[in-house]
Image (cartoon, rainbow, N blue to C red; front, side, top):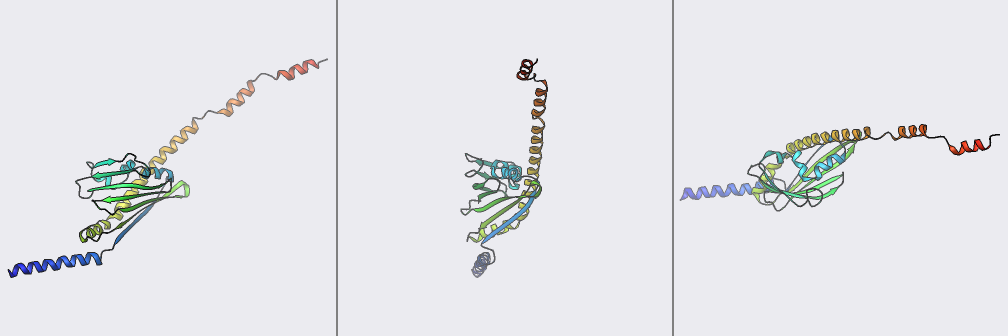
Length: 224
């Protein structure tokens, strides 16, 4: 009986210490921010972020589990677009992403609900034009922690590795944006090349035009 009481006492102390440590030493919120520059116009990068279906091309979490089940809302682009996911992979789990603000070629904001959390994380992407038609893209996430010590600890540990995930996501977004920028440039170049040479046609038409009959008639009328 004494042994059981001692075990219960030790467990109680451990649990109490765990709660105190999680509340005192773990921060109440997390802020993660990363940025990179891309050789693509802000409009090109913006399209890949403003359309949630396009996230499959660059979002790291979307690539972890090919069997992940995703459900999209009525719209996949702009304010009001959302998708939810469900996965058995421990690094993916379940959650929902909702696009809440969109400023063309400048800003995209979303709310992330992860693992049945009622308090969402706020995510933002900004697009700033740089020299040579480039873009500086900044990806930021702010996450408030609940007072639940287990969730607080889990969220803190998860945030530690987010920086690397953001770096990978921006690298993939850069690759996809620059690939599309090249395609757009090739398409625009082809369109310019295929434009009809209206100037040449006008000159040819002018050279082949009949003489001014009015002037000819006048000259003939005044001929002695």
